[in-house]
Image (cartoon, rainbow, N blue to C red):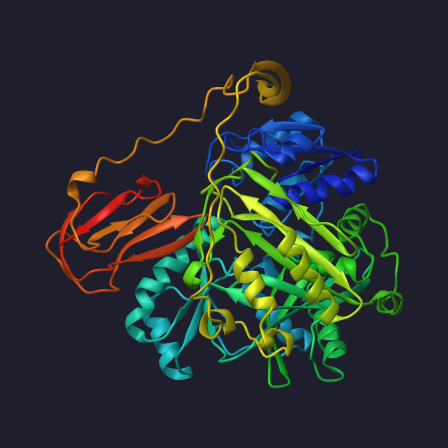
Length: 580
């Protein structure tokens, strides 16, 4: 059994791993960027080491910095969480070469299944049907256009080494291919460190159904449960549930068995998820995520299995503690997970909402669990994923679980940033969701969010007096906490802020200004001074929380001035382009 585990991640998944490791009597090591210096996962771990930098590329995707933290800490195992390096075979191999256990699958399986193109080939070997698409990477817009013309529009351009909807673009016609391809590659590179892509047919009204499985190093593989993850926006999940409801008799078992066969085809062990698209009684292999999924808790609460514990034990060479029949006997009731993201869902736009959480009230009660990565006073940065935490609710059946989830969401309070909670409630209260009539496109195409509103409560000014606060010092990159008594209104220098852009003079009447709706980084300026634009024309591409957002003109006219260029960091309300 490992003596000390380093978690090469941040946020709620790092917190999740730390808690299980602590229950198993295993010491934990956190790593952190400059912005995460006092994050929750850092506060909970037994040790913490600085990676430097602010962005993911400078910190959590900095291989040498993480390897150095492993060496300094003496950790004998590494848990990668999800995202970042969790599906990077080179990272897994580098750790293994150090004599440190990688709590994940073998590098060869990551390569074959982590690459969505080769995973499709593996699925075919295992007997699982696949969605029509390319079985090689595509490198040009011409290839994508040819596929679309042959198979019909729309099509999906997808990151070969991605997941969670990152780096995925749906293209409706040939004219949109080049821009969508460029955007998919940028997002994939930013989030996963690689930009290879492939193309597949985009089904019209599918459900997203996936299978949680675990394998050991002795050739045993079991599937734990099915999950339905169809309530999505921007191809990213909002609400997940287990088991997948409303499937015809025999489909659950057939899908579970197909997932196990696909895993065995590549010698898979540790936790993994095989994703399928389901439509009209048929299912197609979509991809395999060679890691723990964000939504793994719903499989845990209907079975009582701690998947992180199983991951750690399997990595240590232990056999799976249960057979398939024993796992099948555990499943009971229904579970729903709601992702609480820092986004403003008003009007269905789901705009990222970074900022500081001024207050956080977590719901409680029978069958309610919350996996969070933040507490009140913590800041949700524009540089990372915007997941604040996950509300997981169990009920004796699906209607009970839905009602309990609504009750819990009504109790939950998050102040200081916008959240997706208003949209989550709209989904859970909708008759289509209750009747399992929704699909992966339902939120964006049919759910009416025009009246959904989200407000941010202003932060109360601090009162006078002395309070005990913690600050940090670093010795050779290792973090130590120091407690000091300081005035409640200060005592620790505030983080440096970017000076507001001086653009007030370049304003025009009638809503001609295109302003930044959130903090972010300018990826691309799509217009030039003197160009004529119509209402709805894309003007600027803004990246925030690893998502690209096209900002559109709300007034027709001529571009008078452009105040930004690619690479500029902007704040909410900054004037980017003036149209007159």
